[in-house]
Length: 152
Image (tube, rainbow, N blue to C red; front, top):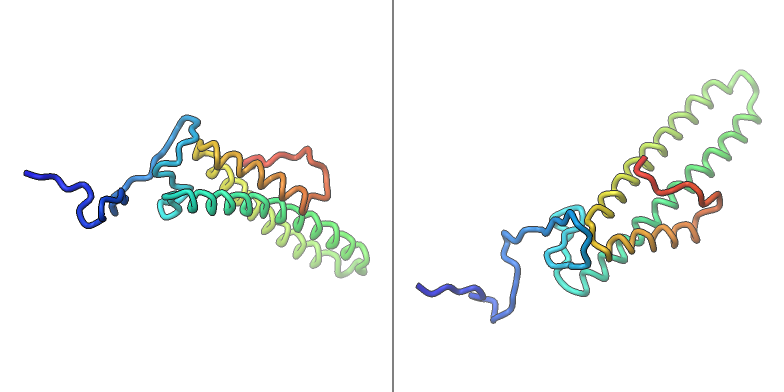
């Protein structure tokens, strides 16, 4: 019985529909069958690796953007509430707290997503997270750099 590994693919190695994502629990630079967070986000070539790493950089930089927007909202809303007549302050503070809670939830979700990116244990992805944090801080960070990109 003859086994045809490349049947219908002209001799090229192409992953079958059942190809598994590689899940590493140890640090690696290998990108073979690398899936980033979702099975659909698969690195299958040098081009998809580069696009994926740029995507990770943009996603991580976006976290700093969300943090900065949250800080700006807090500053501007505090100034707004301070200018209100005393009788309108309670409603404004309730709205302010709701919006701040939404910003907080987005930041928590975003930080856990970044943690999942890092937990690919792939050196390229990990470096991209660091580069994204650097780019994001340069572009959007107007406050102290001491706060880390912690999970929570």
